[in-house]
Image (cartoon, rainbow, N blue to C red):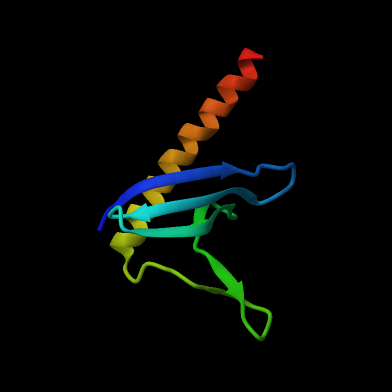
Length: 95
């Protein structure tokens, strides 16, 4: 299974750990919407879409079940995030 499409929606605000929302597609046949790029204590990471359970804790609705797939998703998402962020920085510098 491959990540075939990634859309990044930047949401960087001063002091926020949320850096972007992410939608991605697997094998051009399964779309996952509502993932997030979060600034963790040591690095940025991809948080899968979730909802609050009856105890008020967030549960992932969609998630990879092995490290290989998690790594593929994270590599594709982070590469696109860096590209979009750099394009935006270029636009700001040109203004």
